[in-house]
Image (tube, rainbow, N blue to C red; front, side):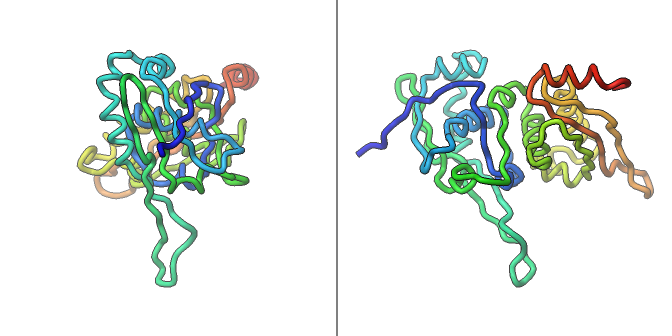
Length: 260
């Protein structure tokens, strides 16, 4: 007997509720893959005790995501195939008796099917503990906010920092990332950007700029720090952030802060 299918509800006011450990896990995907994954996760509600199989049409999905319908038809198979292959690595607790860190690796999506203009998706059962029955240590971000960003690096940074602040609106975060930590966060190897300067220029700087001009964050006091050794290569960056639920709250904060 085939699994029952549920109509996917496309609503930008839905929340993407995810355990912080999953958000902080090692992961990488394209922007479109991340957006489709967020839409699937947004279907999960507090009362759910199991995952469901959801379906929607490509025209509805394209309109909701704000992309060209023909482009989505063209790219959908590749997006879904990649999502079914993508994994997330989660650190589990502390270290074992031999001092080695414990980890688990999961697929994000169990299956994706396309038939006559209709897409069917089901999340991997392995990530149930990180999406169902969450009582603490989780973040909830508006789906509409996540769909606003035009770079995967921005989306990844926003979710990660929000989880690190324990999902507190209006609290100032002071951040320092070494270049090695940035490579880990964005899963960017040295083959892609051998020089730390290029890594920062192509990942964190445009992500921070997109956050800064968005309706959901303020970013300031950005600095780059060089190593105290020969050649003085770029070693780390630092900045401050504060997150807001909407444009009105950001505007109120900015207008009340002289010198921002």
